[in-house]
Length: 205
Image (cartoon, rainbow, N blue to C red):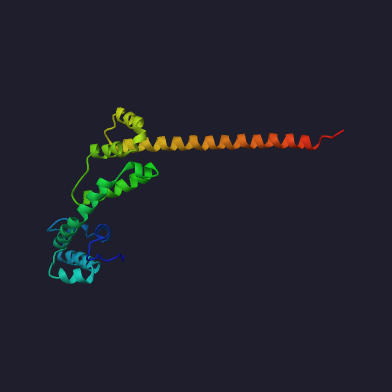
């Protein structure tokens, strides 16, 4: 498999780390970056070769003396999570439920942030995930926020499912209202057409 190499800036570090994990797992070498003494010398060499193959040439030269895949993995993670963590924390602080057009769009953005934070060693609590929705919803929906709180959600996924179902129901209602409005317009146009036909057919004596 061929993926992008890790850039010196670390901008693509998370994607690189995920890709490397996938490759090593397929090759049966994933334990080589998890446990210090796991694998034969040949397996460690193969894992190290895979990792170096996907490093920018500058990084490849910089870490050429490291002969352990576990050490190389740990070193790169230590460096680039320090770059990634502040950026992701800022994304979390800036995340607002009201800024998204749908519940699913918000959840996708939230998932990206939570997974990145978890990779960097930080895990958001269920309370933090719930409060993020409640405190960043549109202020005009205060009554809904209170209603959601009153339901006593303790797990974010349960709130997400509830909000998604409500959103779908509201969309169905809107679609039905639009259909009924179109039907009323068609009936009105039909009635007007009949009246016009009648007037046009009158004979003036």
